[in-house]
Length: 325
Image 1 (tube, one colour):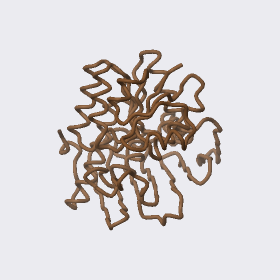
Image 2 (image 1 turned 180 degrees about the vertical axis):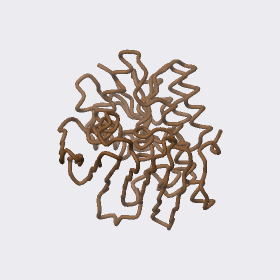
Image 3 (image 1 turned 135 degrees about the horizontal axis):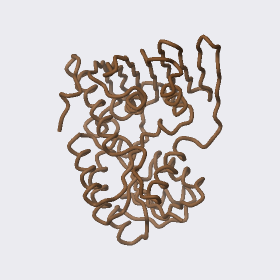
Image 4 (image 1 turned 30 degrees about the horizontal axis):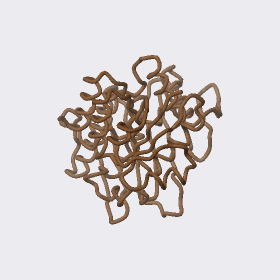
């Protein structure tokens, strides 16, 4: 049985706890949060010890893994603390708010020889995984244009409204669009340059990113924190190649492939992406193999998101080679 210590007590921590509850050989045994760990344990019905910090958790609880679900600016010190104790780490995306912190996280994990996986969860949702597999197998020919859309209300559940502080969260392009930026990198490869536009208001933000990939394909990502609070997250994806079109509407479970041979619909019914990514991480810990999403993967995706923010701020295309530590 793998014993998990979760750092954080918000929406994402609850999502991870729920996923671990569906994994037979994993159990959450400790929660760390400065002020709300006890309330979180009571709310979720966990049988877990509570701690005011990750240091206290590691001192007083016997855990095999630390799972970081706390705000982005806390990732660097928490990973370093876990690395000093030789404890493997799963860390929610984005890996950090800056490339400097991201590289320091990667170095700490590497120097301590611990396993570190970053939570770019789209890669583990069956519909998105199928899209990647179809493209890899040449199912749409040479990819030409991809478009992703992810719209949400403003995430006002964050502790002390930290999402509204763009210096902490990075805004909608770093915190929300990064899902689709990472997925497109995974499917289509490295990006040469980006051009982004962004509108920001007191309790919302909306952004568009256009990407030119090294293979000549073009990608478009739209991300919003502008939906009314009564609405739920909506997302969709389409990718056109010279021999077919893939579409995915997040309102349903189906991936539709249209080509000269006809239309095919697939609806994989398996565990959700959060459970599957945590299972993949725990398997890599048990086997001593490299996790499926490495710190290096996450750094390159963060570089892309930072380039998009810079482009939106400076109103010009930004080459990825400009964004360095």
